[in-house]
Image 1 (cartoon, rainbow, N blue to C red):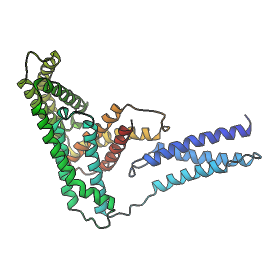
Image 2 (image 1 turned 180 degrees about the vertical axis):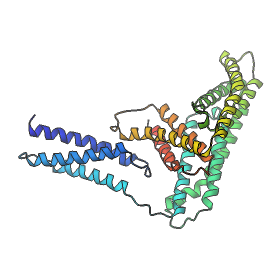
Image 3 (image 1 turned 180 degrees about the horizontal axis):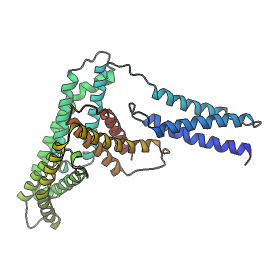
Image 4 (image 1 turned 90 degrees about the vertical axis):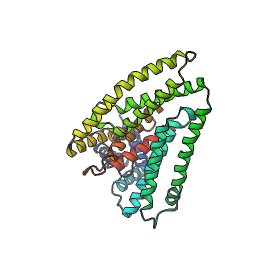
Length: 351
């Protein structure tokens, strides 16, 4: 292979590394500590740049100055990224984190309700989101807002409107259901039940101690309520699918309380050290998966929208568990989980 062809191969390799590093720099959650894999990627780029510079200097008429300049810029972006100092006040950092929580809650609404008929929306999920926004609003009012950027102040001032929107949404769902005929109600309730079953399946991950008891209680309560409504409009003229769903839900409701009790007992039996270790391990699994997506060639892989939604819900559930133990010393990955959830949410939106 001639020196010129070999150098061109190195340039092509450099361009691939630059694309991957640029994608990582642009999309990586800001606070996430770069992994060993990401650091190796930057080191490889540095080495390739040196090789290209040496080889190009030995080839008459071979100008690699522009791609080398681009490569050096990408590498400098990386070095700047991993050495960024923290210059904001504690109140500002807390405020930014609260507003990230707002975006996470609102994305939950968009992810589960956007494009769905109101009558098929799970009110319990809506109520949980509203209560979380109320708590965020309360916490935000306790922080100092001096020096806060106007765009952030605008988001803070919009919080009561978000809460009111969810209150109105809940009322409109209830009104719509009341106006529906028996057959329409049966169709809507079947859809809601199926979503609740999917939610329960997600909640019941293999490790009982890593299940969100609060979410399980909410899902069980909502399913019991829907089951009662389904029985109230039960009629021989309704589709067989509806009757099958009633039987299926009835059987599930005899099993779910036992699963809930098992999960609650597993959580109670953990020491603080055991709980910390489990949460750290689960966080690492999810964050490693996100970083794998950040380190691939851009557009080299396209994941289904449903998978992005599932990942968002997995982060959502884990954050629910973390937030139910506010005094858990040593767990410092909450910010990473929120950032990763929001990034997965953006991929869901674009899928």
